[in-house]
Length: 105
Image 1 (cartoon, one colour):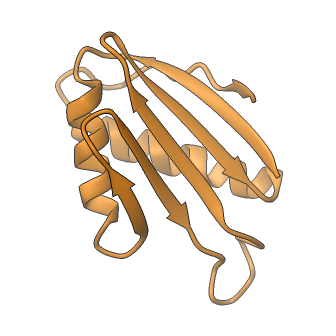
Image 2 (tube, rainbow, N blue to C red; image 1 turned 90 degrees about the vertical axis):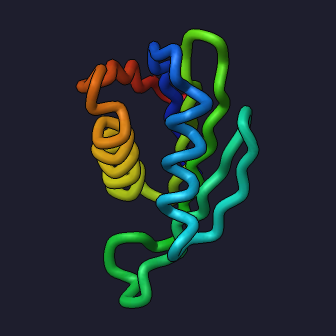
Image 3 (cartoon, helix red, strand yellow; image 1 turned 30 degrees about the horizontal axis):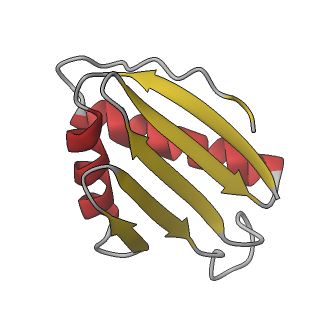
């Protein structure tokens, strides 16, 4: 597994975490509360893009949303980073684009 983390400056971390998890709960395995959430991105049915499960975790802090993505391949990591950024920017449209300082975990 490879992983990346980002600290995203926002005062609405808990709200965005919950919106994002509720959004993905319709078709993915999700658990969350006001301060922590996790989303499992299962292996693609065709086995093409996602050779194994990916995991995104979120922790709401007073001034940041802490994001961690665990993936099986660099391509999966990049794809999941992009999905998280796009979805969070959609929910945070008043302050988008949010700043993600991705770094290896």
